[in-house]
Image 1 (cartoon, helix red, strand yellow):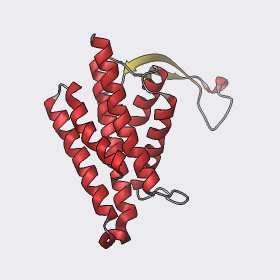
Image 2: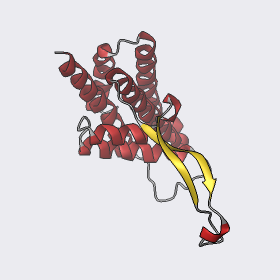
Image 3: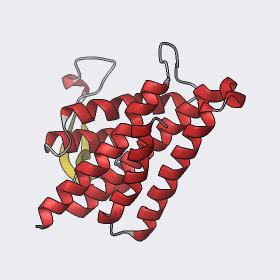
Image 4: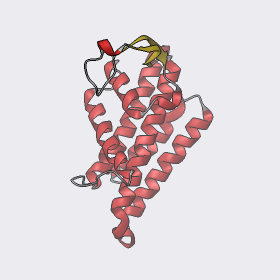
Length: 191
C-alpha cells in the first residue's frame, strides 16, 4: 500500500479496541490483514493480468469491514430501523377499481423492526449520515466503495467503472475513517 494506506491499515487494527465483541474484533483484524496482503499481491507484476479483480476483492473487503463496524454501532447504540408492513389487506370491490393493472386495497399499515439480516450497508450509511455520525464526505467515499463492491455481482454491468489505485485508496481510507469516527462517537457517548 502507499505509505499512508499501509500506516492506516496498521493503525486501524490497533484502533479496534473499542469493539468489545472479541470475535468481531478478530474477524475485522483478519479482514484488514487480508486486505493489506491482497494490496501487495496486486502490485506484483506476476499478477498484473488479474490486478483489477484483486482490487475489486480489496474493495469488497473494505465495504464488508465498514458494514460490520456500522452494524456494531447500530446494535451498541440501540438504533432501531423499521419497515412498513401491510396487514389485514382487503381488496376493494370492482366498483372502486380504477385501473385494470393494479388493485386498490385497504390495509393496516404497521411499522415493524427490521431484522439484523436486513440491515445492509446502504440503510446503515443513510441512518448514520442522517444522524450526523458520518459526514457527507465520508459517506461519499463509502458510496464509491459500495458501487465498486456491487460489480462483484456477475450479472451487473461493469462498464464505465475503472477500479484503479485511487478506488482502492478511497475504500481503504473509508475503512480507516469509519473506524475512527465510530470509535470517537462511542467513546464520546460513554464519557
